[in-house]
Image (cartoon, rainbow, N blue to C red; front, side, top):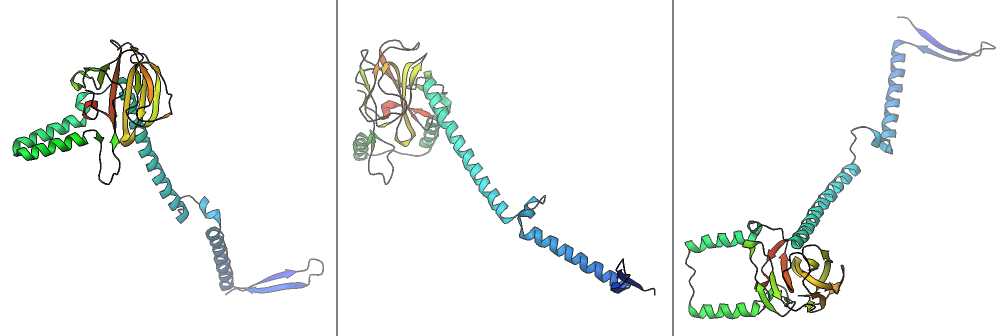
Amino acid sequence: MAKYRFVVLNENTFEEMLSYKLSRFNVFMIVSLLSIFLISATYAIIALTSLKEYIPGYDSTALRRQAIENTYSLDSLKQQLLLNQRYISSITDALSGNVKPEDIPLRELQGDLGDLTEQFDFSINKQDSLLRAEVAQEDRFNLFETAGTESDFTLFPPVTGTLTQRYDPSVNHYAVDISVPEKTPVKSASEGTVIFADWTTETGYVILIKHQQNLISVYKHNESLAVGQGDLVFAGEVIAFAGNTGSLSTGPHLHFELWSDGYPIDPSDLIDFE
């Protein structure tokens, strides 16, 4: 087997400075050790430094955690966006009255209950009827009463006048019309925040107030406004003066609506206008 020697000489004196005997085995060992060293050094540099983040496809624990947090944040933003869109849509519907009767969940609910009453006997005796009537009279004006709620949310009539048209979804009239003289003070039905107060072509000066329980009260055809958007108002506070403004108005009156979670409800069920 041929043997070789690796020699390092001084170029001027030709003195032998370094000498190694080389064989295939020695060369193999040197190359192997050098390769192992280079691989280990490269791995250590990448594993212990931030260079690993530049490797395509590398997925660190921090990156996974950040990706999960971003996913949760994105989902929360989507949910909030949907809620905002629904809120804006409810305000738009309250302004325009653009709601189809079949879109109101209460009508579907009443239809389902009607089917159930045909299958079961819900007859009650006289004493039970009297008790139910008494409780209903006491709780008539306590809106959305829930267990654990210490205070009741009460609504008051915004004006005192003659009820000329009632709530009637069959003709797309989601309000009660109350005839009053012009410039009659219009009062807030309950405390809340003014979310819209401006002029519209069809309904004149309009005010929308957001109350508790996601309830929105709407006051249309006013002669003038006494509050602005963003104002906090109290129950019974004067917010406008009744009039005959807007192309849809047929005389001095207040067009009063109530909306709950984006759907109209009959104000007469919650407020005594008589």
